[in-house]
Length: 242
Image 1: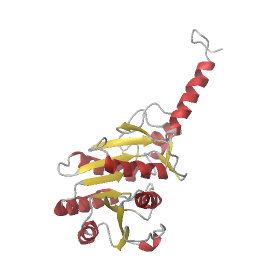
Image 2: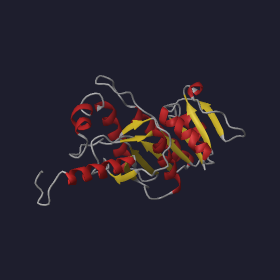
Image 3: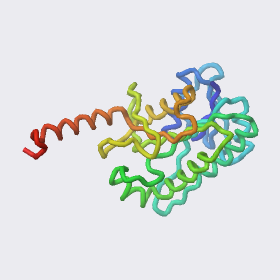
């Protein structure tokens, strides 16, 4: 498949480019600073890097021509007093370009908890979301709401928790439609490598078409099982603490 990746020079974007090439996709990258892309240039024409701005329609259309799908790994800067509109502004341009060129598949990455949920991890819900993440999450939420109303584009939004930089694990992530993967212990995460693989897998399955899908590392399920086992060992048959 021929894929346009935006946000490719960030840590998740680099993983997307690397794994897309390894999987046999033909990749076009649109980047303001192409020199920041650290993925080695493969032989042949499987990777094309185009300098340009994701907020400029002509740049996006030029990069998108001939592609079958768009994957966005764009990220906004967190901060209490840092404004964020990159998600909504880039979406407006990307959707317009896709419609003009009749490209139908769009995959993007946001975060757990763009809308409030009582099961969100405590620190995320009560410390980070109201402070350093508030503007980023608010803009992500508007982007998601726009896509939920979108009728012409087949979209998927992948929503990870805390991102780590570990290698590809080969373990399928936990998934759940909505704001989070429920029933996990407080310290949830996913490696960017596993996130990138899941996003690329969405190109070849219809399971998550037109859905917001929360993900978490498969190892989080192991931690949950261990916690449940420890809790069981700490209780007598009648449920009272030993």
